[in-house]
Image (cartoon, rainbow, N blue to C red; front, side, top):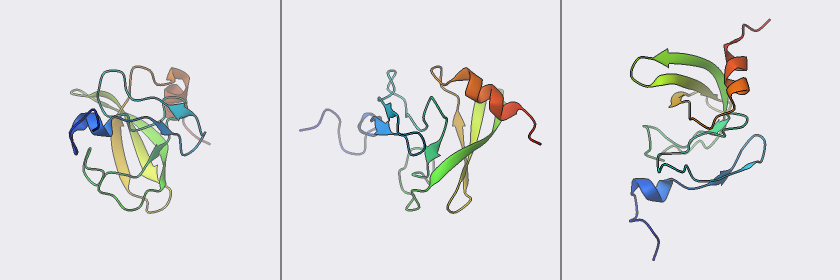
Length: 108
């Protein structure tokens, strides 16, 4: 028997191998969803709505920008490299700050 009930938030707070850099990422220590690599900031297209794990695409999601929300603080914007869907994910305390800053620099 698993540690969490099926479909529970805890069950989905699992570690994973990053789709981009291959780094083995542990479960989030505070029990919230770990939805992107804290090193390279890439994600995987797994949700239709936050936390539902209902997307069938499963494509790599490139971090394309950083936004600021008065409620959530800094938010990463990811775009799926397969279907172009976009998703917003809160910047985590253990994210590579230099990688977050680099997303804010103008390209070109």
